[in-house]
Every structure is written in C-alpha cells, then in structure tokens.
Image 1 (cartoon, rainbow, N blue to C red):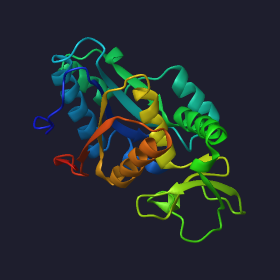
Image 2 (image 1 turned 90 degrees about the vertical axis):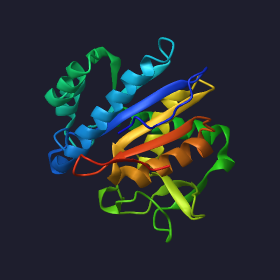
Image 3 (image 1 turned 90 degrees about the horizontal axis):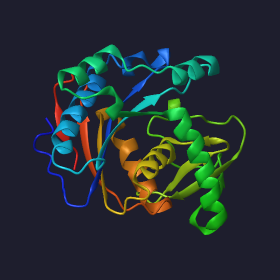
Image 4 (image 1 turned 180 degrees about the vertical axis):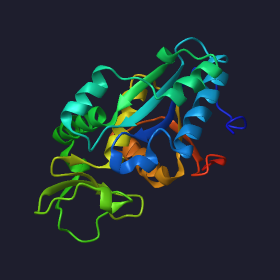
Length: 244
C-alpha cells in the first residue's frame, strides 16, 4: 500500500499522521472500528516501521489524531487522563513489533485550543495577513461538510484569508477554529524547529479536501516549509492511493 511511497532520507524529519478516528457516538461510522480508519492506521504503522530503519533515531514520528470534539467535558477529561489505544490498533502494533510508546496521540480539542491561541498571536504580529469579515457575508468557504461546522446563529467576526479558489476562506468563526486552521496548527506543532520536514498524511479519503486546505493554511499563515505526501484509504478498507 505505502511501499511505493518514495521519501527523502538525508537530514529530513519525517512526520507520519497515522489516521484519525472519532469518539462522538454520532460519528460512529468514523470510529476506530471503521474499515478506512483501521486501514489508515495499519498503513501508517507499516510506513513507520520501514522509515525508522532508514533514519537516525528521532527522525521519524508517528502521530494518531483522535477527534474528541462533541463529547461532554467529563468524558473528554477521563479520556485524556487514561487514554488507551483501541484494541485493534494495539493488535496492529504488536503484529508489527512496534511499541505503543512510539505512537504520539493528539486530541483534536487540544489542537483546537492551540489553534485559537496561535491565530490571535499571528494576527497581533501581522494583522494585514487576515481579513476580518462578518459570518453573514456571502461566498465564504468554511469546512467541506458545512453541516458539521460550528455556525453561529448570530453575526460574528471571522478571520479569513484568500483561499486557493480566490474566495475568502474562514479560519475562525467567532470562538470556533475551522478544520483547516486546526489541521494547520497540528502540522505546525510537529514541524516547527525542523527546517527540513516531510509530512505524510494517511487518512480516510473523505478528509481529502480538508487535508488540502489544512496544508494551504499551514503554508500561508504559519509560513510552514514542510513538504506533503498524502495517502488515502477508502471506505472498504482495501484501496490505498497516493493523491499527489
């Protein structure tokens, strides 16, 4: 699946985002039991094993992104306090001889909070980077799936930039960072301090557009320099393809 993915080795830090699954019961079809989610994690672990043998210690990292948005605070706090990998994910690691400690787990709620802080700091340093617009302005782009966006019922200010299609792309609406800014912040966290990085996204194919916009915001807002390789799994869990 990822065997044909060619990656540079010399002086390059490799960051593998090994899938993304949802805790919220309303998104059960995107849980850790989903075929695409399990396939993306397995593919990323295979890639991690291959690349770790080719690089100096610490030059390849494997991150699992967990969506804990939409669950109550008590459940979220308990999850973070005593997080355990899903049984199928643990079995995947054992089968490949990878220690669980090799997987860094990131919770979407934590990255979301970091995204809010960072965008305020960047706006303070460089206010001309953003355009502030009312959430009622027509023709703005938000998430690809607008029904799952946090949309305010009243007009609030939005941080926007000019998106890849030349329309305003909403990064933050009122207090709510959008998918693109959250992803960009995730990339920034793991590439800052590494002037030469390659990010490999291994995700369910439904996230393709979000990944593309996240990389766009990372480059234009954080001035990120990492290169991206994107691999996607389909709902049947059997097809993996390089989107590049």
